[in-house]
Length: 152
Image (tube, rainbow, N blue to C red):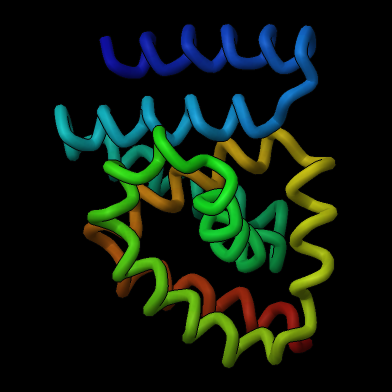
């Protein structure tokens, strides 16, 4: 049921996005909706974990940038985000600091461009955020694998 709900809501968000051309609106709704799913059923994290691993093969080092976008989004989405991301903020900041060391501050300008151009990746970005809540160590391991991939 929850997966069905998720897909339907994402379709609505796509329609709104095409009509209004407001990526921020899309990001807000997705973060809300998946946060709710996490409260209801944490089994979904496993499915999203698999999705994320598949994405990493396709996107390589782009997902490293996405997490930093999440914190930039916080500044744009005041009211809807505050309650949800309160719980995740501390973990996010820790992981972001480690990412800074891995990235050597090189890709920060690219992150903004990705945020405006790649709407679908922002859906995946909010799935990452769920994983951070309980699977932070696993995510860091995946980033290290990506980093080796990227450095080669």
